[in-house]
Image (cartoon, rainbow, N blue to C red):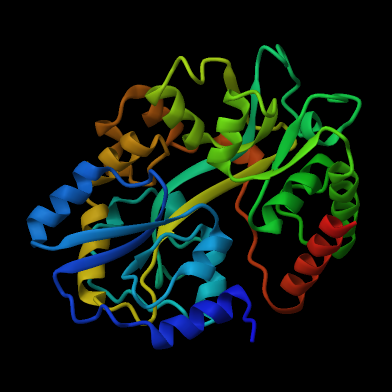
Length: 347
């Protein structure tokens, strides 16, 4: 019998708590390259436990792969309501320390208005990564991917994973805004996606990190990525990624907040809460952001960052005008999106 991703996680949450008898370990399910080893080491030394990490590369993979063996999971903001509605994560209670350190923009968010289930961890933006030797001065527009006249022959990739982000990009390009939820707008987006997939220079879907590496190897010339993923690689291997640049499309894009949540049947929930409070300490938030090259929502951590990352983390008014959180979807609306995405990919 086959189960959808949320049902699979629900089944595993009920049956997979086999590690509950190991209180000396905390099991973290995280994005790759997203936690500073020095911060993890500091938590281990302070608590006397071992942090065991497993990794995923998309929210869909996270939902399908998470189970009761994990104490802390790191979903992106718009997945939090789905996990709440499905009963897959637990309330955090009142013993999380450090919420007062957060910027006002990251308190009481739409995806968790009572701050009951999640703690913001890092945030970033979705945009286009490209080879500037191939595209010396591209317009900062989704047209680099969606308009065959702008890019008639250079190979490009689209972001894999959840179709809501893919449709958000198409909606933004068509003038409906990244946070579109209207049925007719989605139908227009589905048509554009289908036409794009039929183009001879469409190379396929790639997650954020794979997209960067494909351009560095010359497999593609433009793709979709997250800001921090490119910054991380350029700092780690500047010569390898020297010709890669990034922009936020002027039509609008995604502001994504990755969060820390505790599964409903986490084997060590008290230890998980201790970990969340530890990560909210300013020094740990700053070190995490510096390591991952993503932006921190922690206001008290800002003075501890280098100037460029400090400014990028402030979420100023100009950024707010172009960036949207991914809206919450549920029920028939979510089913419609998934149906349209399946049809668009199968044509």
